[in-house]
Amino acid sequence: MILGNVQGVKNSLLQRLEEIYEIKIPKYNIITEEIAEIMSYVTGIINREISVAIDRRGKVISVVVGDSSTVELPLIDIKERKLAGVRVVHTHPSGNSRLSMIDISALIKLKLDCMAAIGVRDGDITDITLGFCTVYNDVLKPEIVGPMSLNYAMDFDLTDKLKYIQDTIKSENIIEDNSERAILVGIENEESLEELSELARACDVQCLYSVLQKKDKIDTALYIGSGKVEEIGLIKQELSANLIIFDDELAGSQVRNLEEALGVKVIDRTTLILDIFAKRARSKEAKIQVELAQLKYRVTRLMGLGSVLSRTGGGIGTKGPGEKKLEIDKRHIRERVYDLTKELEKVRKNREVQREKRTNENIPKISLVGYTNAGKSTLRNKLCTMAAPRDSVKKESVFEADMLFATLDVTTRAIILPDSRIATLTDTVGFVRKLPHDLVEAFKSTLEEVIYSDLLLHVVDVSNENVIEQIEAVENVLQELNASDKPIMLILNKIDKAEEGKINFIKERYNTYKIVEISAKEGMNLELLLQEICKELPNSLKKVEYLIPYVEQSDVAYLHRHARVENEEFLENGTKIIAEVDDKTYNKYVKYEI
Image (cartoon, rainbow, N blue to C red):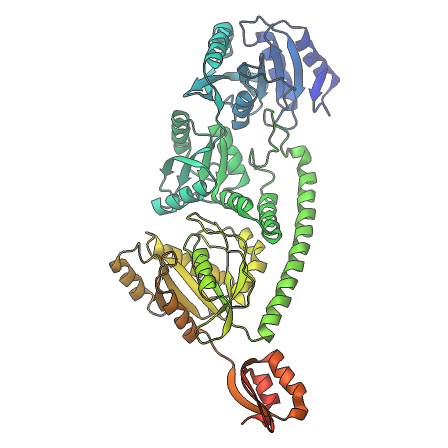
């Protein structure tokens, strides 16, 4: 019985594949020449992968036809401290026999005796590559042999190789290595690659090596030059890397070409940032926004993406979004995007109601903005502890940590300023260079808090080497949000770690801003910051003294609801009130003014 996607395959070809079940393979051989020729012949006609699973006795246990360029594996019983007792040989219609990242993943996870790939071009065998399990420092790792000719592979002694691997696995305390080890690739500068390394670490990825290629013109097929791809392939093999991260956004076709050439998973900076956001999102709103950004990014690249979009499982390639399922996947994504957009619209309306209430109560709105990991959350927690209203309910501090994008969920809290005014303080998501446009669009409802703020506190990590680039990146995002014309204070944070000369340089360069030097973590100059906020924050309220007759007590009640009453005194001829009022209230009760 031929398994997999046999739709559209002629009966004559299926009968040829059925013949494979009748062929006995010597247990010391990987495969016979006869089976390899049948597989390559059918692959050349239908342009799909063919997979054959063989047990230790040399009996064929399954023949599978793939969907597009992928196939699935039969169910294999995985035993502890033992190989599976099954070898899998499959074809690659591209002509490249190099084992893919998912081939290698299946080899290790299923503990296969061998994973072999036969390169097929126009029905002819180009070469064959073998993969075996090996043990290095108590970790199960892949050992790649080849590419080699089919004749050379026929002479390969499988029995001795399997005995050696099996003995090693039994004698060692084996652990499976599921960690991601990356090589970083960029064409801009070292600083950008260092930030990419920080982003990778925020996603628990170990960075092994960085490759920088100065290139004026982008290669449409591979993004970098083919020579550099070969160099990265050698570095990947030497360091046992299983992930390549590019510092810029890649087209879907580039991802696919690079994965085929390098044999490992390839992602770009945008995918990495989206993955970090997906991991860190806690509130329902943040999760919706991240999913929306991911879907918008993926739908335009559905045709070209390789293992980034595959629905991972124990198969060679697994059933990822192949050509046949393309339109179904696109429709599902479009429907999901529509549903998420509707949900975000509800969230936006809720925020509008909350914001309108604060506006009616004349509460000034302050927002913390800045580069990711500049110290916004730490400053927000310190200010809320120092200046929390006495009668407010104790609320949880936002998460703070020395990592990129520690905080995604926007929080708004009330604080009391030194001049007794109540203001709201909002902590926003951090910005970063090359922030994906889809992410900015998805987080628009959250970032609206910035647009409607009365004062922006631009928090800067003045100890960072790339502080100038970070300030410019934040200013660019504020321009994209049409919020660059807001009153902005530049808050130089982490002054306890920075050199005085560097601080002075920043102050001279950005002398058009109101600048305050602080250390949020050490609590330095925070009282000064609050005083400067009072000066910068526009005060639209007027302080007025009223005497309201007792027959007009409804007006007293109105003032208590719509003004900030500082003092109330009951005299013989009426109620004396000292209050801060807006223009509307002032004009309404000017007749009572003393």
